Image 1 (tube, rainbow, N blue to C red):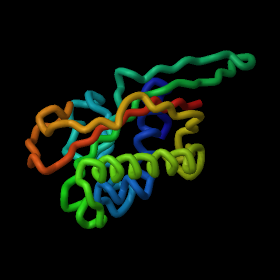
Image 2 (cartoon, rainbow, N blue to C red):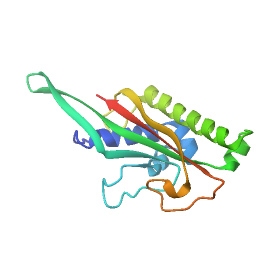
Image 3 (cartoon, rainbow, N blue to C red):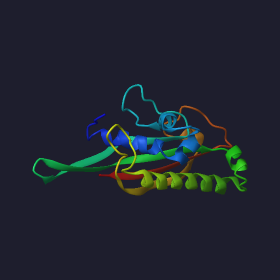
Image 4 (cartoon, rainbow, N blue to C red):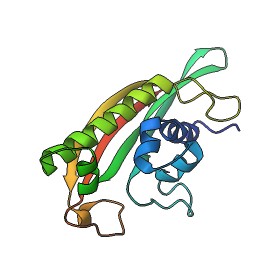
Length: 179
């Protein structure tokens, strides 16, 4: 599958996140195919709604790229995209992890999971098969943009559901640079 430079890196970033074992574990997926249902590129198509938590969201409005001439009719493409993680950390998750203080432990659980996903993304970058004939996105850097932030259930940007007050919804975002 050949994809255009304007949208192709977003699709490859989506595949990269879905291939991370920690992301699959957090979203309850058995494999990449199931995990893809929790990695969203909103507004990409009319039938690609942003789903329930937990999820990753790739912001297509923040997809920046450029092409540089490196030889006769030979270009090097590079760019970046905003990747966000939104997870609901329930008291059940905290209890199962044998953690104590709910607020601090929800933060610790979320930050640890996101950190593991970022580490796995870097390990998988430019390896494996994202699409036929193409490796995963060649990630050359990840910059922490904002977060982690805890939201009240009604404050979550793309959520259409209401969570229990006992649940902790967390958000963290990163600028992912690719070449």
